[in-house]
Amino acid sequence: MASSTSTSTDAAKRRAALAALPLVEELVGVGTGSTVAYFIEALPVTVTAVASSEATARLLRARGIRVVDLNEVGEVPLYVDGADECDPRGRLIKGGGGALTREKILAAAAKKFACIIDPSKRVPRLGRGSLPIEVIPMARTLVTRAVGGRWREGFVTDNGGHIVDVDGLDYADPDSLERELSQLVGVIEVGLFSRRPADVVLDGLIAAGA
Image (tube, rainbow, N blue to C red):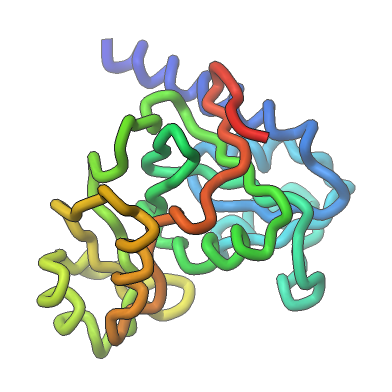
């Protein structure tokens, strides 16, 4: 049964990834994660990409795709990435893989943000799992104490930051929560994508958004 479920999930991830291909122009921002890996496999080698993580950059270069720094291009027409949770309004929780800061930067720089997920990532309300927060290492204990989170021990982000995972937050007003957490001293970025949600959500079954 577990193997069948895994196969079904992988198939949905692949369908979601392939559904994003028609949106791609000459330049695309590329996220991080297992669903994005399917997207990278299908990308034409003629595109130029901005990567949200060092791991993604390696995958892109292995495919023969040119990778550039965001500072070289300023903005991207499209950013494609996965999510840990996605609510009906396209608001997301991201950062299970620890790349949330660069992912949020690319989402902010994108004219269109397409989120590719398997259907299990859809939730009626955010907060089913933990919220990752990237912090400056020196502030790890300070932030953990303030939010009641737990340090993802042994993990260091591409930015040299640490991750604190937080449960039990109130998501009644995600915009305000994102703003409040972002203002804590020592926080680099928060894995709540509410003020800049996805414009399009592709889950291997249906597409929503515009």
